[in-house]
Image (cartoon, rainbow, N blue to C red; front, side, top):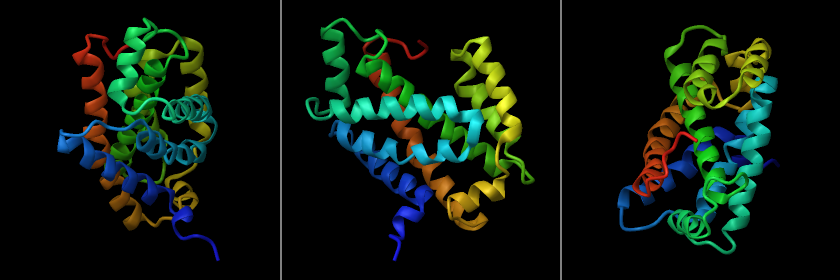
Length: 205
């Protein structure tokens, strides 16, 4: 018999981010790298479900989440991760943990905006929600060639009902889980932004 939870990627995502949100809102605890990277890894299947338009995002995101998971063996918290890179003067270098953290945060943000747009968009097409989410979160950081490839890929997106089918959700249950994820991911995204901004590193590189 299949494990019920493995069949519900949306539910696993929202549950994991709810736990992160609790840690963030407690303000007394640092967010540890291990549970953060584990929660982020649960988002990866969603990128895969979106097809070719987000293939670049899936590959990039998965690789960077894997790097963070690996770093958790020697680094305890996200704060410590940033501080170590500052100390070693490698924050903005390609492949640094800090740079990867910023890219992963962007992936989470994209999913959050995508869900927000799905919930307010009528009809069965994902083109408008996905295009808006991409334009808001990723496009400002991408060159012309990637933006053009993504625009072309938008025509190959699954329909909303196909996406929900892949995620093993119906419209009602998906709406609930998307709302949970939106609510839970918002404070986590803000927390990461503050980590960078409080160290005067900026978040737009």
